[in-house]
Image (cartoon, rainbow, N blue to C red; front, side):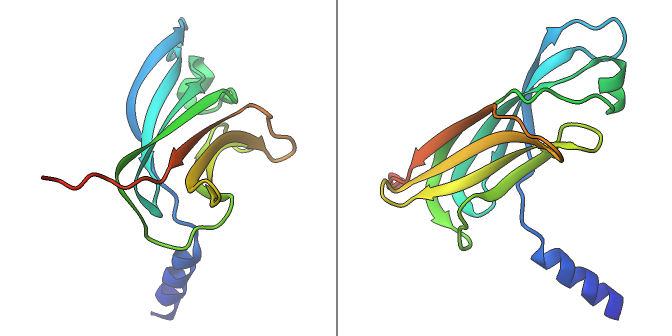
Length: 154
């Protein structure tokens, strides 16, 4: 019982990250063996901001290594976020807080989305980038959402 309580406590202090839903994909390079290289489009809702959905497109490496999960995906990614309902906050926002993270190689490389709040302009800013244990990539993309009133249903 004590171990279960400790595990539950440890899980509660971990950051809440969004999980992505695949919207679609297109092939970019034909591979004779294994899946083709492709661009995948995914959507995720910000776990701490109700009414915001982000759409992410990213490169996914195919071939035999890609099919087995051993290939390293390119750092190319793009993001666009939209207000999809009334915006409300379910927790305290932290500057540069990670809201989405996905492994893009077997061990060392990840793609992540972080959120900033531009208080002066009353906007949420989302940034996607890739990093490695040793060296990241300067390739990035960002989207900004002005926090606006949502029309009431009639």
